[in-house]
Image 1 (cartoon, one colour):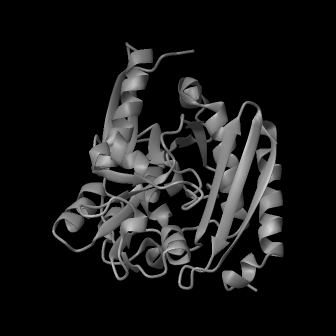
Image 2: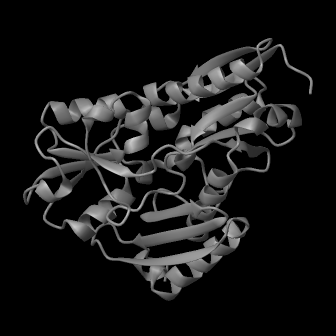
Length: 307
């Protein structure tokens, strides 16, 4: 393998995105001591539009497009993403060269006054940026007032601290990666809030024809996380594949086996259908197909307004 003199990582400039890119930079620098590994920070459309929910302005792909342009223009060799932000269908020019070992995939409650979702009184204002979490909250805790909140992790925490919300529901992984685990009041069990496809995992995107960079990244790929998130993303792909779909999918690895749970519903009413499938680690795509078929049989398309 030829070692390049320089590798450039495209990244968003939010604190969490920079942490993720710096984490990959440090891993590569440790493996490639003679290579200069640099960051190319960028502000994406998803970072700029903060007055509307993602589901209304084009979805989480808005966090990815500018980074992909940097790859196409050869200003960077790789882009680091939160895997849950990566579109379920990549253009043929791009591929995920590595899916890194997962952090905590669960949601969590952040509040200055309440220790758990169960402690929140009727009418408490709960902020979330996700239709999936909105669905979960309406289904499990219908007396709560669910409101949209946008911005990076620190921006959302600042809104909580100034009293705009009684609590936030967020991804535990982001808080832990930023050294903010002390803000977590409750790790929400997956039985209460099933995670989003890919939540807690990092995906590293490269050009499909850039085999040299893909080879450099191969040691960072975690086979178990790749299989689990492939099953999760397959469910999302089969049901529309965007943040406009209130959908959860989470696959747990046990040796060479996968247990996939998925649900989809109507965020406005809290109505949902769910399913579960198990199989070999190598059967991720088949598990996803089975889960999608079962969800459709149970009325998923009606709940999504597609029937």
